[in-house]
Image (tube, rainbow, N blue to C red):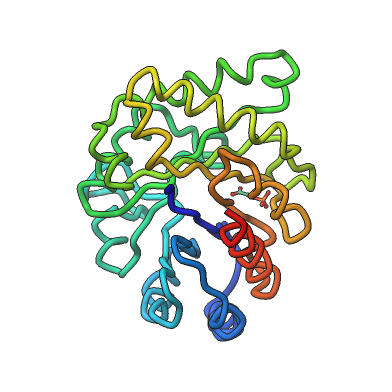
Length: 263
Ligand code: PGA
């Protein structure tokens, strides 16, 4: 059965003090809620990775992720952070290809490929984000855009990485991120199923259906999580704004636990 994952992406939010408060509250709220096969991930800004990684044993299957890494291994790139540094700080995953990185930092497919390879070489699992803009959806191009984003990077990876669950996908329609407009459960399911269909052209269906977790992201919150998580091809959520509050993030995690119980 595919791993179910509830991941929080904090983006550029919180101070060290906020992080301590979140950890104390979240670990207490989540401590008694468990489900086999559930992983919980939080992606704080770089300066907080090590402190959060030190606390991760406070919860079963709790992992810390970085929000980005540089596409070169090391060197004269002032202000950048390498995959190896993230790993040595105690994080286990990295988010790559978030639409905000693609949009505001002009990240190219070539860079995303290099980042993904470096992350995997450094024993970081990758949460790779894909998603179409509203303009692309309105023009009826959303399937084509997603197909291209998959083929640029994911279809070129070794199938063994998928089998080893080193790769997680996040479908995040850009029009749903931070807007309060979530994709309907049917829209999410439709695209997640399409993603599997495209990847089945390259990889064995047993791999794509058996091992590849695909998360939904874009205004996922405690009110809509249950419906989204109930969809057959939705294996969890990549949650932005609603992951900043410990109580709401714990509630989203509980929605997944209830779903796992219902399987
Ligand atoms: P949001 O962000 O939940 O605030 O829409 C999701 C994301 O960008 O990962």
